[in-house]
Figure 1 (cartoon, rainbow, N blue to C red):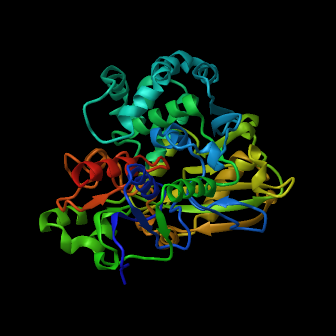
Figure 2 (figure 1 turned 180 degrees about the horizontal axis):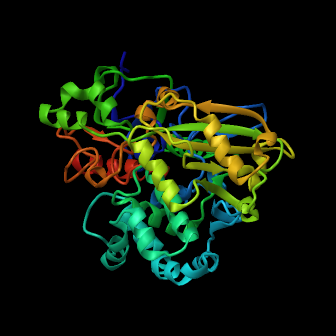
Length: 475
């Protein structure tokens, strides 16, 4: 049953983008209510004691370089609202079988010094981009438009439009630099042989140099709590445990913004959209899923390469060729024996997440869409490969398959945490090809989820731009 009162805007979904959209509208003096299906706000930005009492785990997102870089989050006094970003000594490490590791340091120069014969090549590639990170972010974290900094964007684009596999082989000669770029680019959840996967490696690498790859002290939930406080201080409302299945369940409003993917929007509002547009939404493509494990540990992970001990994130996948083969297998619907796995070890730089002397680890790998296969042993084997004795440190664990991820958050269709595959056909044109991708042919209805530019990640920019679209068209 919808409410008696009316609002300027209703937001469906209280993930970071939905909250960002609501905040942007409330800042402009609009009355806003947010409906959330779950019992708590946050979407992919929540924390919980998933293993044992006293061990705080991030249920989905864990490391937040895009949150640090986000222009929208910079506009909010997060520190005053209890958010503290904690930085590891090094953002990222990528161990290799010879006991060595490539390390992304905050400094481009220090990173290059660890890459042997590829030092100069790395500096030439990343140095100019790192010096202009804020200009680059301004043009990348948003919809397709006339760039504010065309020279900087053009320099990025010359390399970014390539495949990560092709760029790594063209620019670097040695295994460390090639593996480092491959591990970062594999966040794209696409085959590394496919353009524009190089863009993900370059963007996340450059952001690591400029902002680090931090975690949020006490858990990702702290960021959600801050956004909720910001919204309610502006007069906005949030209603939880309110799953919306039809537009008729919503109160009267001049605009409705969906922090949902096309699949859910079609189910809720398909009858209020033109048939041709609805059919395009129904053809929207989702990417691979994830299988995730949270560990409660008795001690820090015993890495063979000491440099891994000071990294907040560790990419487990070996060489460029091995990471590429693993991601190729997933994209072909197979489960690799040696998956590319991402691991975060937050308690090495945030002691608030576990009892004294204890630790946590967060890890996941990519799997075919909708796969219910348990990848626990394969992920553990990858960790053991680079950290012998890891098994002995595990005191408890909690797993989440791709279907369980979708059950937890309906936006994770088939376990896809990016709101849809981000290839050229769905990069700046997601969810469909429109001059304003946040709007729909129905002037009242808008997308504000990661199924719009700039896509996946905790940054709030999808919600920010969607709110601005609604403000232009409706208010």
